[in-house]
Image 1 (cartoon, rainbow, N blue to C red):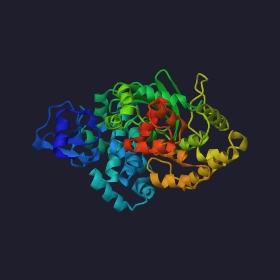
Image 2: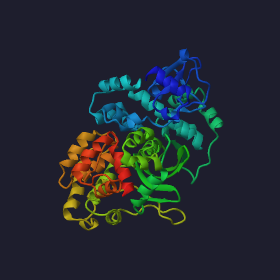
Image 3: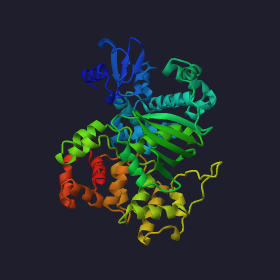
Image 4: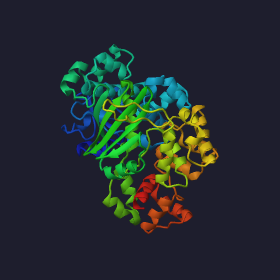
Length: 479
């Protein structure tokens, strides 16, 4: 938050800093993203804030021109494993709206008072203010993209009352909800009621083919599909099932969400952003990896390769266990057979099968032995982790403690360093995991002229810190 660095970013309208901080203009009473196209304000009228909630707490309203509330999320909170980073990911997933601040504090293992103190120090606002800022953004999306009545929008966005909703929208956007709808112009719903189309912002560059190739190679029938430049999948959200279609475009990812319950909009958006790694800072990652001559040519040819993550931590753990010592094709066959033992999904009016979410821990425990086309030991590993998740002994959510989760995973018979590392990388979002024993990683290293002996390669990989997870993706592509 150095004033001179922030002001230079604002003066140059640098999009790379969108989401890193927010610019408050005291003379106009608004706050903007750094790339706002408006005339650069005078230094004496400028304040910088670490979050939109902090700017709102200072009495500023969101700029209607640059819409700072729709900026990409901060990459710092996306990758940090400390309490504040975990709290920000849980708030984005709607935990405060569902469980309140006591529920958030309990998930993190701290008292409400201490959690409030930490968030105020780092973010300039407490958990309630941060959740309120997110509710305001969710409300704006619903107002501008759906035909829901204002009372329905209020409760779907997580507000406790219509009055609270009206007051918040007026305070944040300096206009009434009805005027916000008239100014935005409602977009026609694609697919009928419960369907919302919106844009997910990201920091360029984004190598979309790498993302789609990765997801297509691992797509499971009935759960997900990738074709024609669009990735579709089923989701299990806190209040019901959903489907999402994600299409990368210039400057954003077009997302069409079909929700059973509108209260799931914020967690659905958070999980889609996490899946596609949209809050990453690709220039920081690519800059660090390009310093290695072995990777420089690949980074120059394919800038913006992301780390595909997960919409559900348990799903990623099941996939990791099923992939142990077998090919991706064999793992897909195994998982497809497992999913066939679940109740059939709903059909569309035209008879097509609707995509559904992945198996839950409780559902997996009910699958009979013949549903697992794998060695008995591996089957029991899956059942053991499912029981641990159901009992609350294993937290695979993005707000979980990464070190503690990896430690607990390693205690489960049948889970070794590769499986725990894969889960940490994709389910927990750890940007600095390396898999030196992975066959494809070693093949990719050999292609690039790097050592392919696991021990030697692991020692060499130290120079790629703190972005070794992104190196794994590039080595897989090289292989």
